Image (tube, rainbow, N blue to C red; front, top):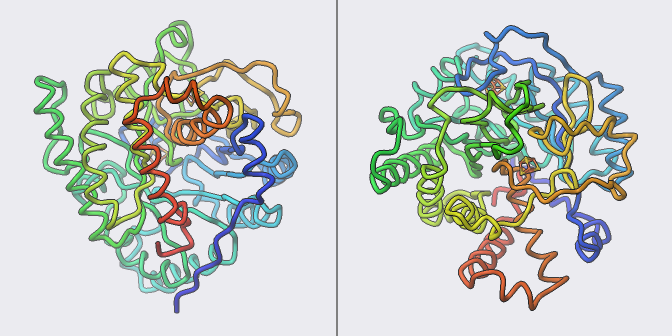
Length: 433
Ligand code: SF4
Ligand code: SF4
């Protein structure tokens, strides 16, 4: 039995009119909790880290959802920590956001529930879970996968058996019309054939290692049964914004990126941070990683829906090669916002922790005064849509300037992505394709 829900479309007025006014349809990421049960070395929220954990109350989240609906937020994500640790309440909240007609509702998991696959009740429990989720308007569900090698992934997460459990669960989810996405946070273990060089020696070799690793990774998740994939870029914060800040790191499987390098010197309210070389990359290394990813994706785009826009990778390569103005500034703090689990406060994103905007329900996001063009990190949740829809805004407002300003390669990739996204039903996780 395949039950695909109809595509939840954005009301025309809420999607197109903001673009004509120079705005991007709004996005809100709610860090529902920073409690986690995994051991990921790339994240400071792993269960072995000793600090006081938090979860937002149901009433508080409902209040935020009310305000989000009122302010025409189009995309709402529940992230962690591990949100599935509070599954019943999470489903209620997703249901509530569905009731409030927020069109793009997303959440994700480290997959711990799937490591129980040897239990007799496992298949029954997954049917039960899929059925509950299918009753909501959840649009996208992501499951973290760190490596093409099951043992490496399971060791990194501290979740033995999870890969087999996901393989069993995926067809069950598909029966209920839920098509989860594999979510990869870029790290040196992706390929699963030993750690990729800890420091880049020769750019070409480094590029080749990552390209092979990405190829193995996509092949692996296709074989597992995934029909969609996303990649979290390695994160770094521009130094001028990081020098005197304290670390307050927490983060998770958000469909969000991994903070690397200068993480301990920045004031983060959200971010999977670690000093580990596993997720730390220099700018020169990032150029090779983005090149490798950009050259790998087209090979797999017909076999699996891949969110990652080529135009974003192209812009990031340009940015890290010294042409930073070639990438469009992020809409964090303008159209996109983040609420933390600790205090329930709003920030422009999870990485500008000095800019506490207070409670989301007290904000008038249309009339916020402080807006800055930011390219301080590569958080794909914010950077990818900023690049794609941002280009549309520029095109509407100043087409002549744009033709001069953007390279023909940029325009070619932007068009190519748009056609691909359209063919993929804009990554509707309630559709098989
Ligand atoms: S990356 Fe996610 S699953 Fe891993 S420790 Fe962090 S919050 Fe937990
Ligand atoms: S680029 Fe976006 S996500 Fe990154 S620090 Fe700036 S506003 Fe935040």
